[in-house]
Amino acid sequence: MEKFIIALDQGTTSSRAIIFNRQIQNIASSQREFQQFFPKQGWVEHNPEDIFISQLSVMKEAVMKANLKPEQIEAVGITNQRETVILWDKDSGKPIYNAIVWQCRRTADITDKLIKQGKSDFIREKTGLIPDPYFSATKIKWILDNVAGAREKAQNGQILAGTVDTWLTWRLSGKKAHVTDYTNASRTMLFNIHTLQWDKELLDLFDIPECILPEVKNSSEIYTTTDETICGFTAPIASMIGDQQSALFGQACFNPGDVKSTYGTGCFMLMNTGTKPVLSKHKLLTTIALGMDGKVEYALEGSVFVGGALIKWLRDQLGIIQTANDVNLLAQTVPDSNGVIIVPAFTGLGAPYWDAYARGTIVGLTRGVSKAHICRAALEAIAFQVKDELECMKEDFGNDIKSLKVDGGACVSNLMMQFQADILNTQVYRPENTETTATGTAFLAGLATGYWKSKEEIKNVWKINAIFEPAMDQSERTQRYALWQKAVSRAQDWDK
Image 1 (cartoon, one colour):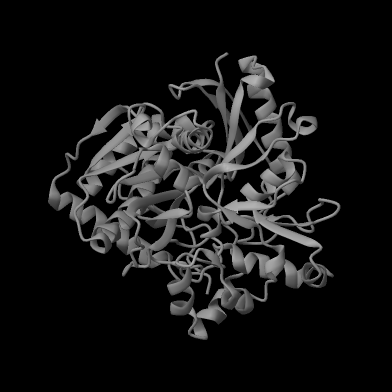
Image 2 (tube, rainbow, N blue to C red):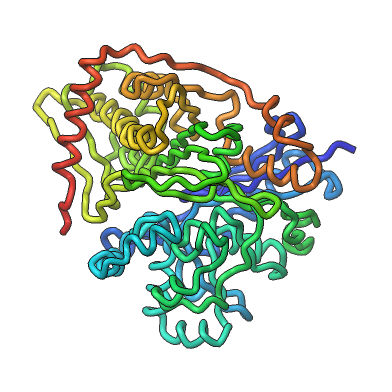
């Protein structure tokens, strides 16, 4: 009887489930968006029940589409939006507050205070991270400080906390397992990436009791099983991994120096640096790329907060396009952006600026600018932000980067991928299977159960769809990038 892997891909704006066979072919899939909440300027929240219900429903829908029998499900893998954090009552299972999303900037004052106290190096040396509202620690602290009775209950062990992978595993297993993996733990700003443990000094700094945190495991192992009464089948939950690390693995970036960039709600570039962490001189993050067999591999990461979310903004808030694909169709009707540059700092700027007070900016507007130019500028803005990251990565790693592997929804745009290659002066490789986030966790779940035997077997599955060669003149490249950096300077410190 043929067996299959279910990959659960819980993202910032939607939940997806994809069923893969041994050749990593997409047998069936389902996707569902869920509501975003913006209670105050710069605040972003999700209803944790929406996250769970949407993810459970698409998993069931995919299983129905594929007409699978329960015994055909080899394993379930989970990949998730990172840093987003949930706290819930241990007994009732009910969240005590909405999920605070990675994009949320409400804790900027907490991180400002830490920076002023000179804690930046202390935090960075332990975690590889830079103090920023982006990470989970300040979000947990905020909930404990602002929800009545939460801190007392937490200290008494009545509250559980976790990132989205932890929440889903706890719910899908029928409350059997409170666990996370090395990659998600490394994004909390509470986990020591050298000792591979929750750090007591950091927990004291943020006033967070360790008893509420999950047990940290490998990214590929059998943690528990799904509850048949909830999921409709019993199968091992055999991988948990943050979405960007999952894409790195799904792109077969197994060697030091391999780089991928994912174009999702945000844009995230990761470089595999091997078994030793590399400390960035350019405010990139040092993070755990993978945990297997009790050992970890590390990565350098650049985080762009707004990537595909910019396209959604053009659609939902400005109404200048009807569908996401319209941005590409309109952008193709003009030769350039007519001098327009968009800096999409809606929730601040990530790497390498780390400016929580930057805000979105459009510069270069004239009477001759049309919505087509705005669309083209939006695609270019995503590519410019990726260049910011790659330039820093080159210097930190000490080697030139000859190619970049890309994935995520926006990478289907040939126009943007060509501009990306042009502005980077680097080859851009787009794989046949651009669902590499889901693929990564599927691979890891399959490795845990023996469905796939080795990384070499996985490498044979990864295939190229297109290669984009740089064609822009160097003088134009330099000029365009200088204008981008000038525009960024206009956006910085806006809300301070």
